[in-house]
Amino acid sequence: LTIHTNRPSPSWSKKRQNKEETISTPDEEEQPHIQVTTAPTLRDSLVNDDDISVVEKYGYLTFDGTQLLSEKYNSPVQLTGMSLFWSNTDWGGEQFYAEDGIKELAQVWKCSIVRAAMGVEDEGGYIDSPAENKNRIQIVIEAAIK
Image (cartoon, rainbow, N blue to C red; front, side, top):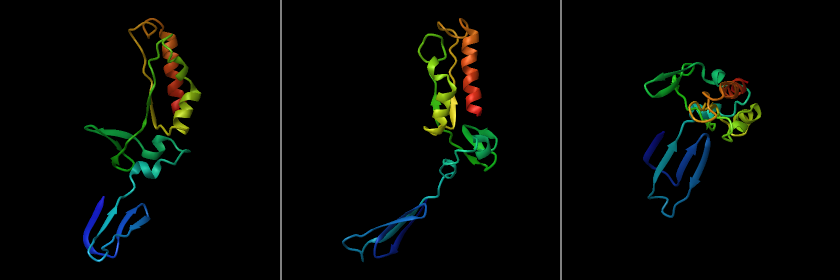
C-alpha cells in the first residue's frame, strides 16, 4: 500500500489495480491530492486459475512460525476453505463426505483447502466404525487431489 499526500491537484484520485476513480470536490484548488495504490496480492493474481492445483500455483508450502509460505514465490500464502462436519456414522454429516461436494467447494465456493474432521471417540466415530470413517476421509482426500 502506497499513499502519497500533499500534492496539489484539481481533484482527488484513487487507484486500484489499474482502475482510476476521480472524485471532484467543491474547493478543488485547496484540496490536497491523495493517491492510494494497492498492489494485487498473490492470492488475487491466482484466484482465477481454476485449471491448476494449489501445488502448481504456490509450489511446496512451508511454515515460518505461524505464517504459511509459498516456496515458489517466497511469500505468505492464504488458503481459503471449509471444514466438514464430524465423520461419525449416523450424525448427519456423512452426506458431505462425497466427491461431488468436494468438487463444488473447489469450483463454486473457490476453496483451496478442505478439512475432513474424523470423529474418534464419540458414538459412530472411528473406534465404533473404523472402516466407514476411514473410507469417508479417503473419499475427501482423493477428491481434493483431483
